[in-house]
Image: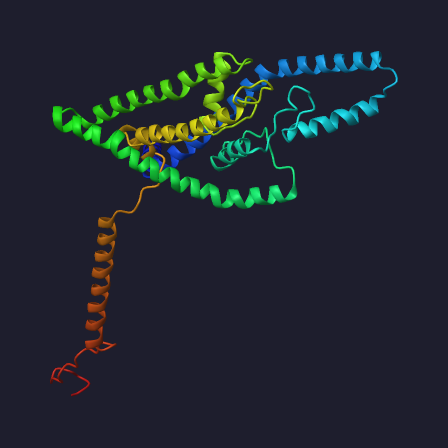
Length: 333
C-alpha cells in the first residue's frame, strides 16, 4: 500500500513538472552533445596536429643545421614576429605582399563580416584607433543589422511562405500542416542548391587550391556565421579582378544570410516544431486563468467582508437568558 502511494505521488510530481523535466533532459542532452563533439574532434584532429608539429620541428632543425651562423634564439624571435603579423593578415611571403588588406573592397568585406558576426579573423585592426572604432561600429552596427535582417526576412516570408501555403491550402483543400512541410522541404532544397552547391562549384573553379569539399565547407562556415577563417576567398596572389571578386563575395554573404534566415523561420513556423518547443518552455499564464484567479479572490474577499459585517452586528460574548424564578427552587423558597 505504501509503495503504491509513493509511486502515485512520484507520477503526479513528474506530470505536474513535466516542462521542467523536459528542460533538464534538454540541458543534459546538450552537454552530452558537446562532450561527444569534443571527443570526435580530438580523436580525429590530434594525430594530424602531432604530425604537423613533427614536420615543423624537423624543418626547423634542418634549417639551423644548414645555417650554423644563425642562433635558435634569433630564429625564434623572427618567427614570432612573422606569426604576429600573420595574425593581423599581413604576410611576409613575396607572393602575398601585393595584396592589401585595407583597401576599400577589403575593408567593405571586413565590415560585412563584422556586422554579420561571421568574423573570419584573417584580418584585424592594427591601430588603437581602428580597434576603438571597431568596438563602436559593432555596438551600433550589429543591432542595426539584426533590425535590417528581421525587417527583410519578415517581408520575404509573406511572399515566399505564408501566401503560397494559404493559396495551396485554399485552392486544393490540402491539409495546411502537410503543405507547410512540403513547402519548407522544397525551399530548403532550393536554398542548398543556389547558395551551397552552385557557389561551391564556382569557388572550386576560381580558387586554385580549393576542391569542391573545401568550397562547400567555406559556404557552410560562412552562411552559418561560424567564420573560422581557415578558408577566405580572394586572398591568392594572382587573383584576377580581386576588387570585383571581393564585392561579389560580400553580396553573396548578405543574400545567403537572408535566405538562411528565411529557411529557418519557415521551419520554425511548422506546427510540429512549435509543439516540440512547447515541451521545453514554461507555460504562460492564460488570461482566462488570471480572470478565474481574480474572480476567486473577489469571492473570497466578499465572503470575508460579509462574515465581518455579520460579526459586527452580534455581541462579542453571548450571555444566556436568565430563567424566571419559580416556586420550585428551594433557594428562593
